[in-house]
Amino acid sequence: MIIAIDGPAASGKGTLARRIAAHWALPCLDTGLLYRAVARDVVAASFRPADPWAALAAARGLDLAGLSDPDLRTPAAGDLASIVARIPQVRAALLSYQRNFAAQPGGAVLDGRDIGTVVCPEADVKIYVTASAEVRADRRLRECLARGENVSFEHILADILRRDERDSSRDNAPMRPAHDADLLDTSDLDIEAAFDAAVGLIKRKIGQQGA
Image 1 (spheres, rainbow, N blue to C red):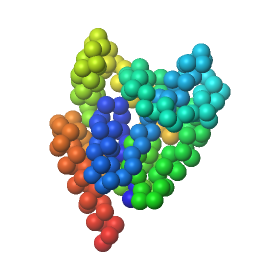
Image 2: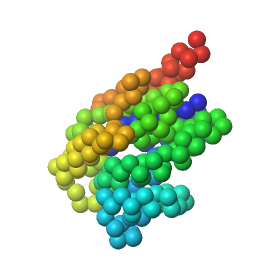
Image 3: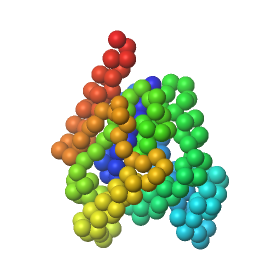
Image 4: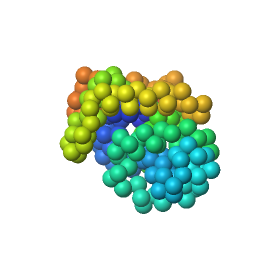
């Protein structure tokens, strides 16, 4: 069973993906970490994130062991990742790894922005997780404050809106719901309610396929 979880920044898709993977005992891949790691390595090599050749070299030489780096989960890393993710050569270089991960025996859960549309268009279940920009900014603000970061709601909201525009307007694999994805708006849901709703969607989808 391949489950594709897509959605914009701070929608809760990553947390949901991990919970869903644990529930069905499936491996889970946060594909955004791949792009964050590429951006990190490009900057570490003193190149600009938008440099296509430096980004491609970083993608081809990516050390997957480095995905556990906690710095990859910061808002700054996410902003750089959305720049790298616009480069078609980088997306192509990372596509085979993502598809191989999904194709392992028993299936997998993958979350990102183009899983249901590009990476795994034949996924058994596709869920597009969303929430209002203001709710997502508030969630991100609380995460940053918990880490001791001095940021403002206005700054985070502007960053989220900028990332939404960048991710949805890119020519290659833009962020959008797959035509057959179930939409899950988490604006008014806590993680437990969102998880219950997602499990319900998945069970209904499996039931439809088994009918």
